[in-house]
Image 1 (tube, rainbow, N blue to C red):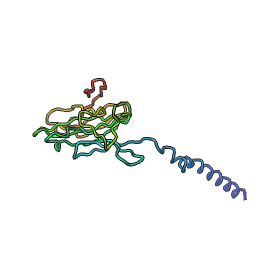
Image 2: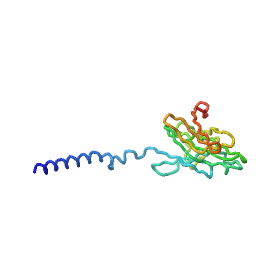
Image 3: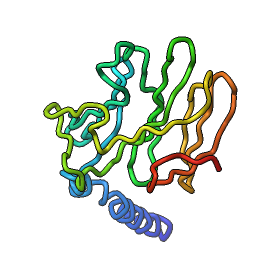
Image 4: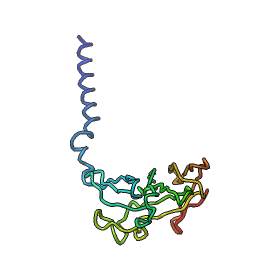
Length: 183
């Protein structure tokens, strides 16, 4: 009889503990992030652009171009891999060919555009390449190299792997210039 009474109290205790553990995941906990901005970046390879997407409302809120749109060979440029830094900035590989030479750059797209003159609401206006303050094109690699992989480590260093040479290069971002410097 004592064993049954003890297991009954143990079952009640475990049920209460389970309720207390799961309570934050209930309906009130699920709503706590509603309305907060949460963005992702998606490459649009065919047009050398990146879409900034509101992940709460599932809609595109901005589009950033990574190559000259009126370039006669604009189709030679593609956005590729994306890495995100701790501040939410997107680092995008922009790859292409100039004639027969492989080349590329790393494009930094600023996460917070609040301080800029234009907040880049999409679809109007979409700023031309070179006029968009949120986009910085940073040259990397040598001729006949093309950036193929990108990652950002916990210390904020940007790692770029190159197709053609097989090199892996560690860069530090200098916001004052702006440029990427070999480490």
